[in-house]
Length: 427
Ligand code: PMP
Image (cartoon, rainbow, N blue to C red; front, side):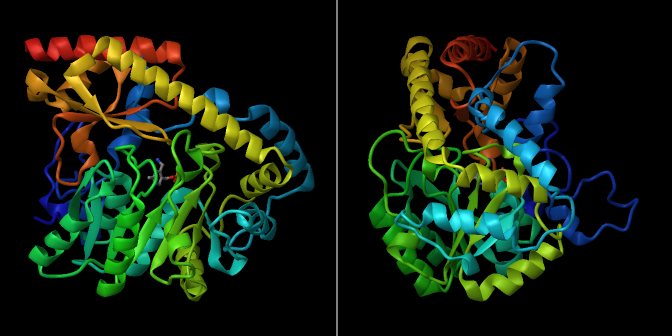
């Protein structure tokens, strides 16, 4: 079954999806809304930020995929920001990005397996704008977009906003099941325009796409003439195991690989600085597409990021993050073993921010959207499984972010989650 924006169900609370858009919007009928507005399904993940901000009691926040406040280098930012503001960065910048930041991105990648060139790059307002540009360029209404299931629904939601039909492809511990993708495409009787994948430490499952599957995905993309939308915010945050070659390493200069990157998870999400790395022939359209959105990315913030990356210390910063997230992930594993034990199974991420938790046995009958309501009252928040599937699958699963909370807070939060599960079971 493929999912279209209008086939989504409307639910009132955070746990599944917000009510905005999806046909029943209060503005519909009152104002001359475009049909396209029905595709604006909104983000349950983003909505959790305001929902949690409105609570006055203590909540352990495993919901948002945000870096730990303690690891954001605020001292260095303060110093660099003063320099940037003294230098005066208050006018419009080039749409493709500040030349110094483009060079800094190129320099930083020059010694990696995926070097790049300035003509491949456009600086974006976060990774989200890169996703928006990709779907804007490659998806017409009614086109098929294949996504991992579960997926980062801000990405699939952006595809829906351009009228895509979504094909959800099952995953296992090696990432997207590429055989299943082939079968589903054969059943659909049409090929996808875009295959949207988060290859490393996927949001929300934490799993990494294996090298054989990456190679196979490249083959399928070429057979179908489909874009691979390679969304990799977490690749720099591997804290265990070995790197898996990226699409751009496996197939250098491949026009069908469109890579979206961001500084949100490795520096700070509030800066809203990311970039697209794509075939240089797309550059004119990327710039025109971005000009239709925001003219250019926030100029002072680009200078802050440029100086941070250039002034040294960036590699040490990344190494520090990896060590800290390893510690936090191990702490969450230990707390889960202590308080939830065999009531759940979890994935085994080797990096990134997320653990995917599936309820087992009798607990599997508990719907995680309901569990969310109880858990919120008990003082712990997570993202319920159905919010991470365009068709609302995974009633028995949830996403935990282990990156934002200290081991001590994680212990408190997992204990509260276990209590919430007891209450939900008894209902
Ligand atoms: N893609 C994925 C998989 C993400 O997890 C995120 C952030 N949650 C983004 C894209 C968006 O990144 P940004 O905050 O830079 O827009």
